[in-house]
Image 1 (spheres, rainbow, N blue to C red):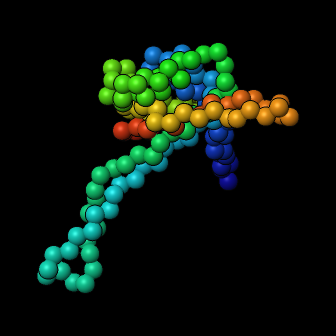
Image 2: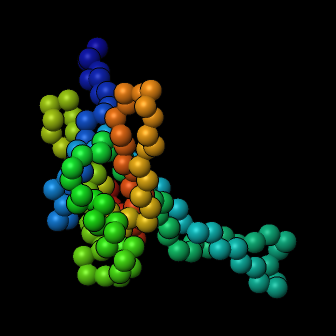
Image 3: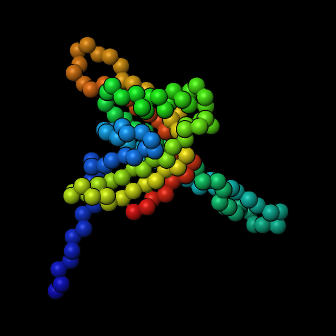
Length: 149
């Protein structure tokens, strides 16, 4: 009997993130956005007593990027650009790649996110009795997504 090759699923703790024009890529957490197609119900007068389901617009969830607070202001300045000039400003929309690495550190899966802009910024609060790392969270909306690998 031939041996069956075991294929283990990838672990989610080794990843990197590329953002157009931003060098800060050390994140502690990142979410992969959902993809949903709107269901449009339709019924003609001569149809039986049930509706047809047609496909509508595709909607993508937002991405949550979390990182430890450092001296770098690149991501915060990206959010500030959107606050001050809107998401249509030059340089406000960027492409992002979320890349999962295998055990050897090679790219194993990749999600390319298009026309992304930060819609929310949040920093963890201060706590004098804690020694936790200060965390910045950026909520990023996207227009389109493709899984490459």
